[in-house]
Image (cartoon, rainbow, N blue to C red; front, side, top):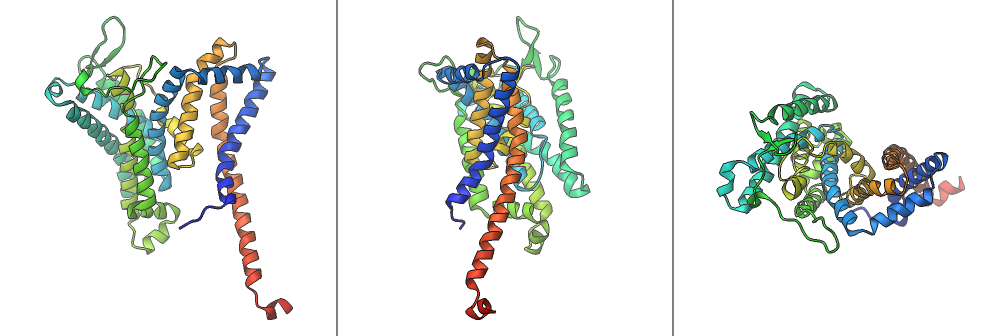
Length: 372
C-alpha cells in the first residue's frame, strides 16, 4: 500500500490551495481596479457565512454539486470525459418527477415511492449515458462529441415532454408549467436546523452514501482497480486480460446512474415537481468541482461546499455594494488556475521522484564502482 509522507500530502494540497489563493488575488485586483474594496467583499462573505440560513442553503447546493462531481469523476478515472452529465440529470429528474407524481403512486407506501423514484432516476441516467458508451465501443465515436449532442437532445426532449398535453400541467397563478406535484408520501422530509428558515435536504445521506460507495469501488474492489488500470494504460489492461470495451461501458453506465441522482435532493426535498425553473447547469459545475477535488471523495466534498458557499453568498455582495459577478469571476479563475497548478505540481513531483531514484541508485553502488 502507498504510504503517506509529508511531501506527498503537501503536494496533494498545493494545487487546489494554490488555485484558490491565485483566484482570490485576481479577484482582489479586479475589485481594486474597478473601485471596490476587497476588504468589504471579504467582510460581506464572512458575515454571510455566519448566518445559519446561508450555511444550510450552501450545503443544499453542495449536495447536487457533489453528486455531479462524483458522476464526472467516475468517467475521469477511465479517462472518459462525460460532458453529458447535465443532460443525463435533467432528463432523469423530469421523468422521475413524472413517475413520483403519478396518481397510481399515491397508494404505495412512502419508502417504496421514494425508492422507485431513485431507481428510476438512476436507470434513466444510465441509459442516456449508455448511448454514448455504445457508440464509443462499437463505432469508436468520441464520448465528448456524443455526450455534447445528447445534451442538446435531452434539452429538447425535456421541452417536448414538459407540456400540458403530455407529462406536465400549468402551475396556477403563474406562467410556469411543471410535472404533477409529488404528494407528501413521495417526498423526503428535510432536517430542521436551528436559526434557519430553510431545512437541510433529507437526501444529504444519499450523497454521503454515494461518496462512500465511490471510495469503496475505486479503493477496495477489483472492478474499480480494473477501471483505473484501463484508464492509465489500455495496452497494459489488455495484456492483463481486462476488456477495455467492458470497462468503458461499465464506467459510463455508473457515471450516468450517479448523474441521474443529481436533481433528486432538490426534487424530493424542496420543489416537489420538475418545472421550467428547475436548476440547470449542475453537470458542468460538477466538472469544476471534480477537478478542484482531484477526483477524491473528500476533496470533492470540500470543493462542492466551497462552490455552494460562493453561490449562496453572492447576494450579500450586492447588499454591500460589491458586484456579485465577482463570484463568477472567482469560480472561473479557480477552474482555469487549478489545471495549471496541477500540471506544475505534477512536473515537480516527477522531478522529485527522479532525484530520489538517483540518490537511491547512488547509495546502492558497490565500493568498486564508487572507486572507479
